[in-house]
Image 1 (cartoon, rainbow, N blue to C red):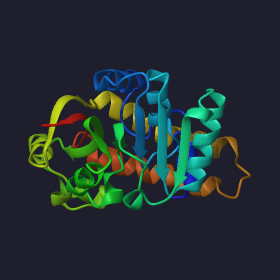
Image 2 (image 1 turned 180 degrees about the vertical axis):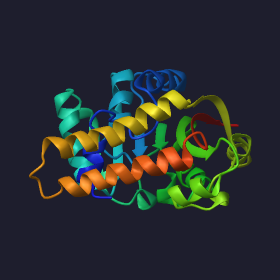
Image 3 (image 1 turned 60 degrees about the vertical axis):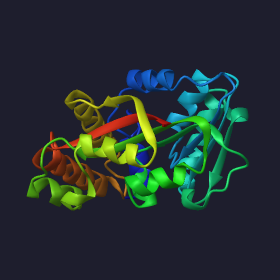
Image 4 (image 1 turned 90 degrees about the horizontal axis):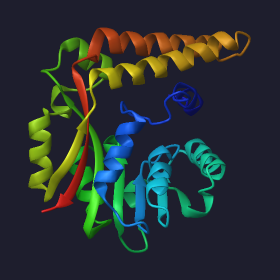
Length: 246
């Protein structure tokens, strides 16, 4: 999807996941890092998680890694607006090949496991970056119920691409990570996210009827809304895990 459309779609919900800000803050509190925490956000997009983490850890520094130049430019602008530009370093590169200078107290990877080949592969990669006593905050999809053909078609995935929640947690433990807290996004959070996503894109198109991309934006919003409502609503779940080694 065109990154401009993605940015417009997230204009009323800058967190690119079905989770409300109050629960982002709760997760960051439960991560319980020191004020000078060193933070890494892999697949940072427009930097919403990294910036919120910096607000929680007032003497900390964050590195954000993404291949999307447009998203990184938006992250830099947001950091400047929030007075956090001097504490956020952005890296335009493939997160799979990112080589940091040292390790991190807190590593974030929310909704980006596809970039590393899946949940198991993400756990293996991020293990190289987390301090032995550090925390991994990882957001991933799972099946709330057995996936229907309509859900699989809407998402463009196979049933084996995700597991149930219990199996997801078991996979994390098999990789040496123990959940110390988690937040499972509820239906209201999913609905808020999806209505914000499709509604923001629709509003932009209706407010800019002469724009050459207006019709494409409307079509994209309509298609996405149909895939969600007729496909994966109440089928696909999302959990954000707070993990420690153990």
